[in-house]
Amino acid sequence: MKINRLKNKNIVITGAEGYVGSSIIRKLRNSNVSIIALVKGDKDLKRKNKLSSSNIKYVNIDLFNKEKLFNYFENKKIDTLIHCAAVDGNYKFKKDNAKEIYDSNLKLFNNILDLVILKNIKDFMILSSTYVYRAFNNKSDYNYSLSKLEIEKKAKQKLKDKNINLYIPRIANIYGPGFDLNKDVLIPTLIKNVLNNKAVPIYGKGNQELELIYIDDLIEILLFILEKRKNGIIDISDKRIYTVKQVAKLIFKLENKKEDYSYIHSNLSFDNNSLNLKDRRFINKKRTNIENGLVKTINWFSDNYYSDKGVWKKKNNLLVSLADTNFVNAAKQLFASVYLNAGWDGDYMLISSSLKKEEVKDFTDRGIIVYQPELISTIKCGGGFYPPLLLSKLYLFKKEFKKYKNIVFLDADIIVNYSLHELLGSGFKSPQAQSFKLKNEFINNKEKTKDFRKKYNFRKLAFNTGVFSFNTNIINNNTFSEIIDLYFKYQDLYFLGEESALNLYYYNNWKKLPYTYNSSPDKLENYYGMVKERQKAFIMHFCRRVKPWEVESVYHKEWINNFNKFSEIDFRTLNNDFKIFSKQDQKEYYRNLRKNRLVKVLGSPYVLIDRTIGKIGLFIEKVNPKLYNFLKRGKNGK
Image (tube, rainbow, N blue to C red):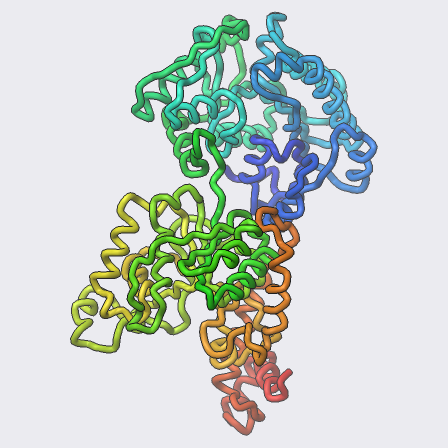
């Protein structure tokens, strides 16, 4: 929805790491509002702030500590506060910890309410729950709903004579993409059991009644309430009543699986007469049909989790390189540079086929997976120039790798300088090759490649498989076999082996990444005239001439420093002290590329521009003095 009234406002969100809080932040990311996201004890706080948008700041504050809370906001302006934080859990947790939940939620809320009054915050939203309807009849088995009801009463009493807009959305059971599948709450529990072919646990007869709301609908309505200033209590659900058994049946049906239940005798129950929808206030907005919502939820869980021996694990990202014995040290440096500079969030893997046991141990002891599949071919590829091990990177397109969400492959002769976060996402991605065409992927024989020339445009840009990434959604049952068949069908015509095959397979189906994701120092120097000090791209790929492990390389010191740190790193841990190449940095980098190229074309070797190009130089001086001065400075190497 469009943000109008909230435009340029300062919004504080408590419980920002929770499902609702984080969903609101995702919706408002890159919008024209300023968000302070309050979290408690978040070990990834530094990472979140680095990777978040410029309009979001994550802050670690214990909301139970009133003094610290007030001190932090002493000199800060707040226009809107959305209170999402609460102590919550599943049915059993709520019953077993009733007093703790009640006391904690009230204490936490009192501190927030006092802050709202002190700062005279004009818009205050408190996330409540439809569970309060059970508390009305005093038939609740636990104090969560009582705490929510007490919070509502207290807010209305304290703010009665204040010039503060109070919004109290009572929210039904939430479901949708983004929920943690390992949380022991209703919808995720039902889905993971159905997907894992396990019996669904049903307490009693499963006739407990509940209301539901799809996450996207919820966030849309919450923002609508703030935009339109819909004060007071508003219910948010899809305006229907379900039983637990009905929802379970629907999930079985959507997955086309036979119903299988495990009935558990329990005194956990609800007052099924407390959820009457009559006389309740709703926002008149379209809701997602429960079947469509569950399909999206199930698909999201399948894309983001995998089952390992009956346990559901969140899919990690996977960073892969490839090396034989000769490139072991190169691979160590690569992984170290990724860990130190990119803060990689995921697994590390080395593909090899000829490492010694002690070499394998060097990697596995540090938490790096060593994958040693059978060679696809024992014959050198790419016209006999490249080792057969290169073909092993094609194994990444096997179905078994779908347990990962995203895969990034980097050659071992690379130094990574910044976060690789932007490599993640949909489809197959690779940096566009600078002036490298599809014709360069094949042998220079027009007769032998004439069939290709009819089918493919040889003038199209090609990509370099020294760097590529993809979301594993692109892998299907046949992907690997199709690529392998394509390789062997035309292997005698490929100039660059597996790279040529992948360029054919993803001919019109790859996304071009900027050149800075695969910058060759030789190319930067020869084509752009960039000196080493200005060659700080995302990824430096030494695919030509002097390698960084050679002493004469100007990058040797940096390479050695990364290599020496390899033995100190546990790659199973997460490094939050990484570097970000900001959007502004990228713009400046590309601006320098264009300027240097212009200098290279017009002023190389550097001479006085007036003497070299005469009237053209005088014309440039007249219409663009800045460019003229830049070109003149080039001759002095400034």
